[in-house]
Image 1 (cartoon, helix red, strand yellow):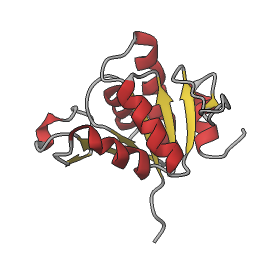
Image 2 (tube, rainbow, N blue to C red; image 1 turned 135 degrees about the horizontal axis):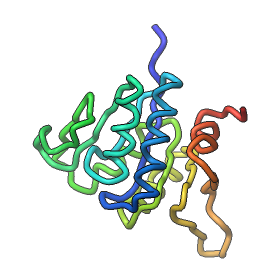
Image 3 (cartoon, rainbow, N blue to C red; image 1 turned 90 degrees about the vertical axis):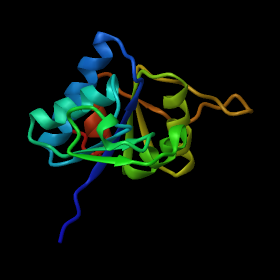
Length: 158
């Protein structure tokens, strides 16, 4: 049996209208490609990506910080309550074969860090830039559009 591909979409629980639109587009494009969307399951970018995926008939997985599966957004196909608080960020980052980061604050930064540490490809849409102690840039691939971010995440240059 072929296993469903997973891409994590990360970003702030509060976001701008532009970030929300980008996240929804990313979710829609991933679902149209037959890819499940993994998020932290809450509001903002997470909800918008899930909404986009569900609108295209896709599967969404929310890895929730609390113990109540009903605390997730209304667009989750699968809600996984962890009771781990922000520590669940490691699970979100580890779950996707690649990560698309849209905007975000410190929680997003922690997920980017976990993803890079796990050897995952991180694609950024208006998100963090990072350098190591030697002022060398840390690998976050910058995308200019939702389509480019999805293609990069799926290693498709078309």
